[in-house]
Amino acid sequence: MKITVIGSRGQLGQDLCTRLIEEEHQVSGLTHQQISIEEASSVASTLSETAPDLVINTAAYNKVDQAESEPEVAYAINALGPRNLARYCQEQQIALMQISSDYVFGLDLTRQAGYREQDAPGPVSAYGLSKLAGEYFVRALCPQHYVIRTCGLYGKAGKTGNGNFVETMLRLGRERDSLSIINDQHCTPTSTRDLAEALTRLISTDQFGLYHVTNRGQTTWYELARKVFEIAGIEVETSPITTEQYNAAADRPRYSVLDCSLLEEVTQYTLPDWQTALENYLQS
Image 1 (tube, rainbow, N blue to C red):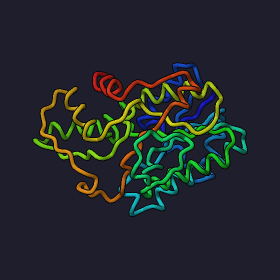
Image 2: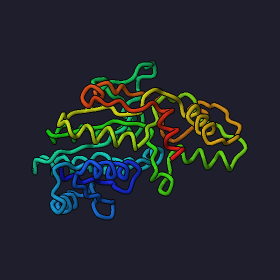
Image 3: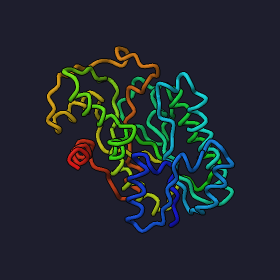
Image 4: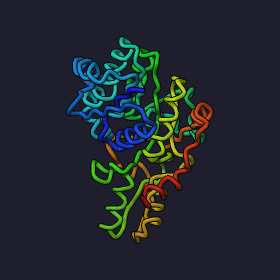
């Protein structure tokens, strides 16, 4: 299959390209310098050159707090960008995979069970709203679509690029004597290597639709940080705090664990639990 990966230098983009090539797909990667998804003309001219059977969009505006002060920028990249891709792919009868986020949830403060694909979304931030809008555009405009919700990504490209939560904790754990970390946001951090494996399997099924894809289990950012320090052998004093105490510009879901049973049913593949994934990442 001829596949074009947009955002090929990002954490997920790099791991996806590697895994797809291993499966002998013909892969072309595009960076932001090569395609501006916010511009329909850029989408059309660039994708006409790569002529793919499938487009995978991993590009996104991920500055969650900054999106509160510049929602129009987040919307342009996370919503209008996918809309441009969906329109082009529909016209050319190309399949489209759009990567979305667990941040489309968060409004339900009593939630204690993993969200399934049919559960009603409810974002609590400008970023979450922009990602949900992108989902709706893709699902409405492009019949051959995969929309993938995932969570808390970390991968090897984060070591040299913009970083990720795991790399940030490794750095801060070595720099400081004590850290205060949020302990009331429940989610499932996910390895981009494991996610790439799952997505590679999914595209071989031609079972289009909306999917939740994360590692298994759930944790909090505080518990994740503690596990990072334990595996890495870093001694640092840690204190759990609430979302309100941290006082970030954007609100976050208190519970955004995703139920991935649909993916497992379709692909016959189960991602590793988050602890195993983290150990594999830190040991590699």
